[in-house]
Amino acid sequence: MTKTIGDVILRCDNISLSFGGVRALSDISIDVREHEILAIIGPNGAGKSSMLNVINGVYHPQEGTVTWKGQTRRAMKPHESAESGIARTFQNIALFKGMSTLDNIMTGRYTKMRRNLLWQALYWGPARKEEIEHREVCERVIDFLQIESIRKTPVGRLPYGLQKRVELGRALAAQPELLLLDEPMAGMNVEEKEDMCRFILDVNDEFGTTIVLIEHDMGVVMDISDRVAVLDYGRKIADGVPDQVRTNPEVIRAYLGAGH
Image (cartoon, rainbow, N blue to C red; front, side, top):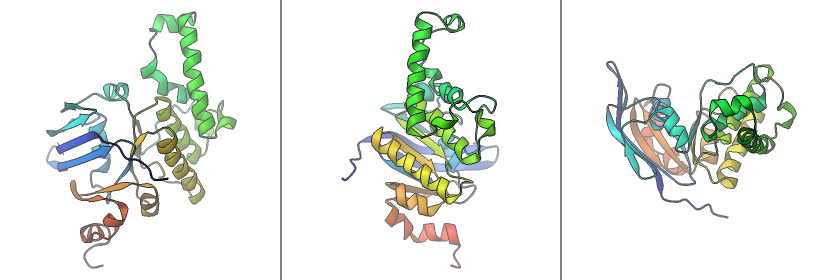
């Protein structure tokens, strides 16, 4: 069955970002359509993570705008991004190592919690009911990611591949409309990559989640992406379906060098 790609849900227009005298992004425009998987690729230092950081408000561009679900802005704080339906994983695992898998995934529900700290401290009445509801969502995420056996295990004791899966679970617990994945398969072996690819495709298919991912494994990118945007030295040099990008001469030069 052919997947249906919707209208543009996110539009980045003419984004430029500098750190001192270093130009990280130069006049980049990228749009993301509802229900698609967009891969952003490029050599190290191309500006890929900087682009994700602009989208979810970690960085504020000096020029350009980001339009999310029809609302245009120059800058947004990360918590505002999370509350508006954007979730994120990071290149370096950012979990609470002493907490269990379940408790780490529960932190992904923070923006959904409505009871104040006093209610939560008392753990009574409405606060207790709310936590039970959030815990049920997290348990469904755990079942979906097939990590029931480690739900009570401190994540610091888990192997790297499972920690990456827990981090994905924390992002999914927020029930995002847009999921940003920064190198979700970095450091994984072949089997772990296959599992992560399957989960990413299932998230996109079963939950309808729109996904933007950064990934260096070109085999993975070409297999799971609907569209690929290529950055090089902070510029966008290509944007299209995988087969178009694969044969683009400028992309080949960026990855292999003109001599090849």
